[in-house]
Length: 257
Image 1 (cartoon, one colour):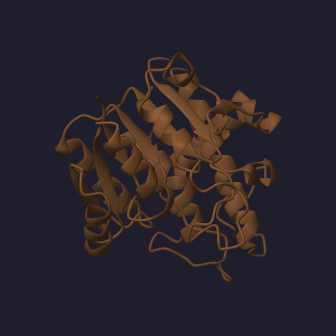
Image 2 (cartoon, helix red, strand yellow):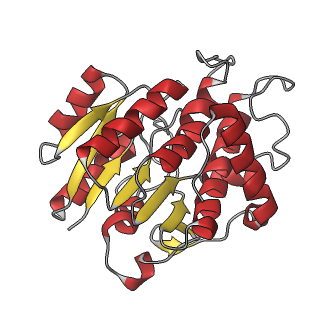
């Protein structure tokens, strides 16, 4: 069985995926943004191995989480689940001068991917909203644009897909994939969500831990354990590389060759 880290697993789909993986016999390490959230995660998933603590809104904490993860031992898979939703009425700035939504949703997965010892599998939670993401990448940190939380969220989900595809291309020994869990009634999704919440965590758990041939692929995009068409522009190696270069410039962390 595999050892799997799930970021943002104190509630919602991260917690649900953790429960599925523990039930299947995997060793699961949880994550919460503070000590209370980590304790909540441990209480919600009693079979988990441990829970790490870091607020992914700062670059220093992203690096700290990577250090904690590496110190705890090697992982077979990492599910990059931590994310903020699309209800921020104003641009909330982090200690690094970045939009909080971009820092948590897009930059943190990049920094963690670069710094956590390379696992066999990487899983990135994107969204159907990635198709509305800004492919120009001209203003990732919203200094020129008027703040629009839904657009910022959509952009970040495109960024998750670009990262997954870039890693799949650059690291052929790693199975790197992205997925959309559907619009489900979590705290982030809201009560009006219409998709089946029971299916929401299944694809990420399957990609992280299944030995089925269909799950042992790389560079693909999934919905409910089946490949799904992605925004065609995301396949561009040039666009992927531009996003990687921007993340390196903003974080000071290079993605290893």
